[in-house]
Image 1 (cartoon, rainbow, N blue to C red):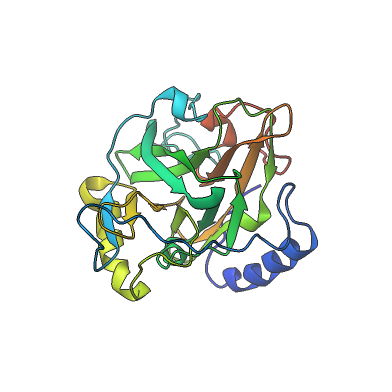
Image 2 (cartoon, rainbow, N blue to C red):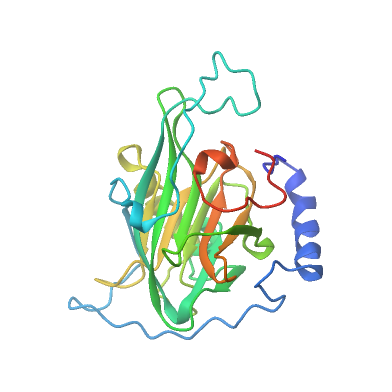
Length: 275
């Protein structure tokens, strides 16, 4: 099935998604997410920053040990391929987006706009204590239409996923074509969200990039990773990968631009995926 929706349909989807989330939360998620922690950041050697800072993610090929994403299929050319996945018009790259510090083991997934103030409508407990997880992007590197993010992964464990399930509370509904993974926290040092739009977008797309780091205090760790997702406005699903024992090992958001199979993710695909 195709997940991307456009325009005014988003309004109806918001209500529908909220109703579904209340009635049938994804396995491993509760309908009442855990409260966001009060965090007092450790101040870096330079003291407290006056504002949130955004910097481009270093563009580097991800080490296979840091991700389950391993693109398999050769891309198609939209000028000759008339199938529904004809958007595959360039090579699929796996790029390391750095490490994300998750305070109290909480991972938030939302639009980039919601990430600005350190909160996310959807978040999940991925560990019982504060942990650092690697974030990886699968990027469609097109000579015709630019660089676009097709998959995002937070690797919780290097253990191999055996199956995937939908995390309804973590789907990204965006009218700006952006998303973010973050450490939810009420006490991050954030400014007015409007003041952060320009610097975050500039950092995300500098030098043809597709990723930005947010730090909420000077010399602090990365507390959010921002990225454009898929083809723009739409609803983008997030899935949980579990190993053979049922333990959470991966969180993945699908940009719905290339088939699930192109991700190379091991394990049984989610039941609602048709490609």
